[in-house]
Length: 199
Image (tube, rainbow, N blue to C red; front, side, top):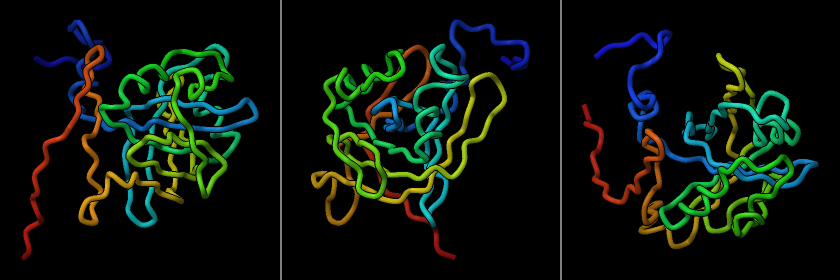
């Protein structure tokens, strides 16, 4: 099949989200004058090694925020955010935190998620996350479409849970990823090694 995106798709659910998958989940925590906030984003990834940098995109708007969502509004004010990674054990808490709570709601408290303080930025992080990336906002880029923003951050500090380090390598029990469709996720636990060829 083929369809022009400008015409819309003929399927029950938008296939774009399922085609570009799996996508890691950035569980983004922020702090502003309104308090602490936590929300998951599946348009999330690393974009550079040196210095380490990540990005996530926020899509859609909330009526109690000016043309965006809580995370983008708060990190614009504070200039920092923390990207927490997610495992299968945290799936229910992660999912609970994506509810459309009113601005100013602390999802940590609302969803029973233990928080810890970051070291290099004034921001909370998910205490039970396998890894958390403390980030300074580099730029917020307006994308095409209403309420679409890309947030680019420089990683200034990294937390790794002790039980996720094995033989000097980051090795969490699994990695929760988004697959698309209505609510499809996967927990990636099987891995294999494939090294670059040497010429």
